[in-house]
Amino acid sequence: MVEHADDDATTEPILRVDDLEVRYQDVIVGLSGVSLEVARGSIVAILGANGAGKTTLLRAVTGLLPVHRAKITRGQIVLDGRRIDGQSSTAIVRAGIAQVMEGRRIFGELTVDENLRTGGFTVRDKAATAATHAKVMGWFPKIAERRGQRAGFFSGGEQQMVAIGRALMAQPRLLVLDEPSLGLAPMVVEQIRQIIVDINAEGTSVLLVEQNASMALSIAHRAVVLENGRVAREGSADELRNDEKIKDLYLGMGTAGRRSYRDAREHYKATNAAAAARAGAAQVGDA
Ligand code: ATP
Image (tube, rainbow, N blue to C red; front, side):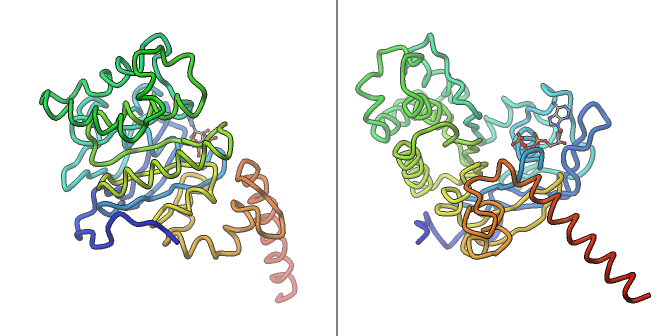
């Protein structure tokens, strides 16, 4: 069963992406006509094979496209009723979106406390920052015990906790997580999964890109599947979990027996080619 934060989300989503097109270096299309919503208080998972556009979507939402010589060439992104597309990444953090980057990018030379402080730089209210710090320590007792130690020496799971804690210090209304379970042992993945559920239960909406689709669909309310920069499928997590194609491509339960979607792109190509061949054969048969 999915552990929901609250099911009575208001009609205005916390995040709305409308007809988004992104190009790299003015030419390479990263996203094309992508529309999606994150309902207030919900978790939305973004699934897709390598090169599907997941990272590009996160870069667009967090204002990091310019760093990668990319820009939004059509459409808009609306956070809580206000357009944020075109704003700087700092302005977007201030507006209420914080990201945990892929690969747990923490400052290894800094202590846990110092790392957390860097996450709270946009918050001016000192009392609120102290309260959030206390909350983060409560969520992550393991790193709380070692708050004065350099984070660079921590295990992968502990570094991920520091990275999530740092993002939370910005007091986001929307937490964006890029592959939080990547490279972590199953037991640690389960801890991170539970932490995301707990954070969401306290009211923070979550946009989650995750190569572990089964983990993502076990906590998400809804999911969006990207394929070649477009939305190929959108639905409730329950619907997608029971969808044969999704099972086959992403959940390792179908005929292909996959455990992740690393090789899903190849599989897509093969199944699409087979379908095209069948359609071609049918047309020849019809003629
Ligand atoms: P992965 O899991 O492999 O990171 P992804 O779903 O995150 O895949 P993106 O990295 O967003 O996919 O890629 C979407 C498209 O944009 C691909 O065609 C990719 O080649 C292109 N792209 C991504 N980053 C760049 C870049 N820095 N410069 C040029 N093209 C890029």
